[in-house]
Image (cartoon, rainbow over all chains, first blue to last red):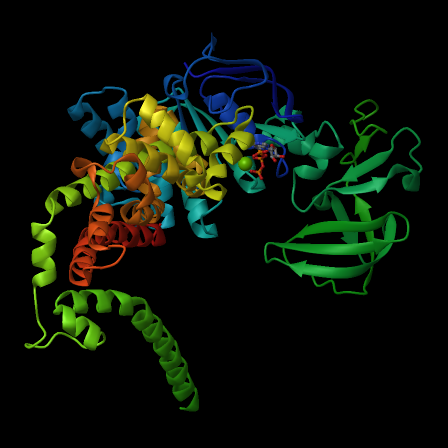
Length: 336
Length: 279
Ligand SMILES: Nc1ncnc2c1ncn2[C@@H]1O[C@H](COP(=O)(O)OP(=O)(O)OP(=O)(O)O)[C@@H](O)[C@H]1O
Ligand SMILES: [Mg+2]
């Protein structure tokens, strides 16, 4: 239980079309992440799955059952919002138990489930408090607890960690990964954060302007991007995109090389250039090079390196690591 | 050091301004109450003096309580005011929720139409209202007043409350929907508690004109049994002679119920504000 099928979902607000035909299959127990630029329709899609927004056309099926006319509370889903959305006038215990209470679950059973979820999320000391008396991280855990208690077939997360600071974000991310393993539930998760997407997902869905650009495992998207958009969106720093004409490649329009797939040397190499800026990150060194042949290049070297601005260097791409794209931005796979 | 002194001066100036304003605002109230405890001659000889043992007199209050059914008038005023406020808040909040929460055709037009009453005084329609009340056989009933005051208070209530409801987080309402709350429960249990300060504001703004109104009680319900305090006090104001003792006493008495209601609402106001601050 817990599969989801979307069939050509469209959604328009007035004349403004936000979702332009989304088809997606999510298998039971999968952790699926939606990524995409701001305003591309991620939240709208999530709300459509939850039933908080009616699709203009298309069908949503949960476990093979059409849920177009089923109320959000009856869809067997739970949602965690970016703004926590806890009920300000209820205690943590009542916040977590409200859904079950509305569903008519007996009191003792609610107590039990709330206690269990609170245990999982180390919320026991706070059960009697109001949301206003909790820290941001604790509030987010309550919001997650409220979702767990309902034992949904499908968890929906809308950027649940974006209001937390960096350290807390890592902790909560691990907690969500652990939850996914222990609950074995299907999860759909929206995020802006690449690291979150790459580390949590079984499957990443890249959205752009209301359309799906590519669906695949994190490594598939990284190693075999289907088009220019995905190539540029996945991976940080961004992939170098070079005009194919500069490399005398007549079949392709654009050539992409990831910064980590370029070697650097002071003596010899394919492309001569001048260092314009260096970022020392400890584990990595990011070097920006202006080259006469290929223009601006970003290179990522592992470990510490002593390059400085104005040094003359030679960059060489790792063989077989180039991505070639045609005039429409689609990847060219033949020949490689 | 000099900075501290400068801020003392600034704080002093602010306080002086506020105290001056308070004095100006309270002066008529003070004058009314002080003079209501004086004999008729003292009121005219020294209107600004506070009552002394020689000038002290309860004659005004005695007249008021003997003349007519003043307790009854109070009751009428309180019933009309409280019921009208309750209806204005209930219907105003319901309309505001629909306007702010749901997308439907004509939403904006409907909002404008409902707010129109803020700019057009209801008294323009007095003749039609009177005809309507006569036809409905409601003349000389408190119901007539309550209906008119509810209509009069609604536009501002809808306007203020819908603005406030737009600020209530969508996520919160959506979380309620996922937890299985009905739209009624979302309205009553999530949204209303969060806009309590706005409700208190609307209540205060609605209450004062209703309590002080002379026009509609005079036209729609002038009978002895349905007189309000404001109308009841008018019997002491004659064309040639005015019984100032009685007028001032009646006015002093009329201040207290409003004061009580105001204190109740303003407590809500303050509690609402502090609850929002820590969110
Ligand atoms: N209720 C609404 N009425 C009209 N337009 C809306 C509404 N909700 C969203 N939109 C529009 O739909 C588009 C997609 O919004 P959505 O919130 O789904 O984006 P998103 O991908 O979640 O962005 P972000 O990453 O910034 O959260 C936006 O252009 C937005 O302006
Ligand atoms: Mg969003």
